[in-house]
Amino acid sequence: MIRIAAPVLALIPLGLPNAKALALDGSDEVESSIGSPSDTAQELPKQGPPAGRPGANGPPGMPPGDIVFDETWATIGIGAGLVPSYSGSDDYVVFPLPLIVGRVGGVGISPNGPGFALDLLSQPPAPGSPETSVSFGPTFRFRNDRDGQIEDAVVELTEDLDTAIEVGVQGGVNIPGVFNRFDRLSLSMQVRWDILGAHDGMLVEPSVGYFTPLGRGAAVQLSANASIVDDDFADYYYTVSPQQSGDSGLPQFTADGGLNSVGALAILTIDLDNNVMNGGFNIYGIGGYSRLVGDAADTPFTSVRGSADQFIGGIGVGYTF
Image (cartoon, rainbow, N blue to C red; front, side, top):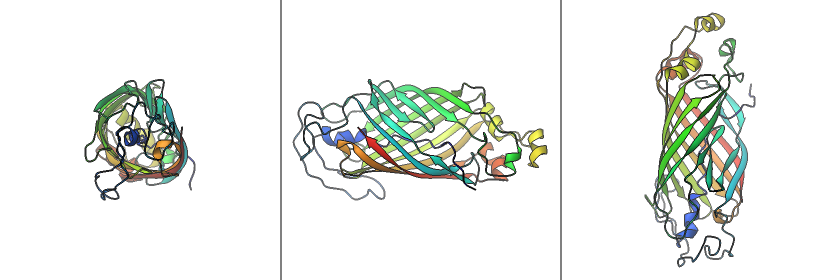
């Protein structure tokens, strides 16, 4: 059976804010990139350096004011995807895939699973080549793992878990121009704590991301990430208590914290009028894989009833303005 569930996917900004470099740099040539499908260099028309703010001058053939990435902009979207019904499950459920990313009032906004992260150091567009920058700000995430959306009949016999809201901080560094003039490498980390008294634990999530345009009308973002949890988190989600064992028949298990998972994610964005700079509608697709490790993989919820291999995928429609 398939049911609608809240998302547990850790989304990444779709790369559109970085695409403003195509206009600000004064050249439209993508020199090179890495991996399939972007391992073929793409040649686009060149132009001289623009003068003034973005929006005053843009790529060839674009009227003034048609560059949407100024000091305030946003992308909103909605879609649908498939995700495991709980962490460690081998049953998949349909979930809504909302998206919001942008810059409002000098603050950057990016999706963070079912939640969001703010960048208080977000910089407005400026003429010239992009420079290395840092990000820092609060982050929020909603976690509803095993709170009633369980597809496995045996796991469903154990008690439902409470919803958690995790609050913390994120920080990182963005390095442009790694393999071509318009790409970006990002190194970041989040630390979050549960504030609702559900798991009462802490998570540390380092990640490495890479963004590159695929010509003027598309972009791809790749990331590798890991999750490290403390004993409280592991005990809440992975321990099988004597009561749970008696109710479900699963063997008892005591979980400890440590490395929880490692994974990779890819997001492809295609602008429907083949120009990411002028906003409007776009299609985004998401695919990812993660591997549970340690007690997250050894718990009977995973090893007996589920799988340590976790896949995610989805597609949606966004609008940038």
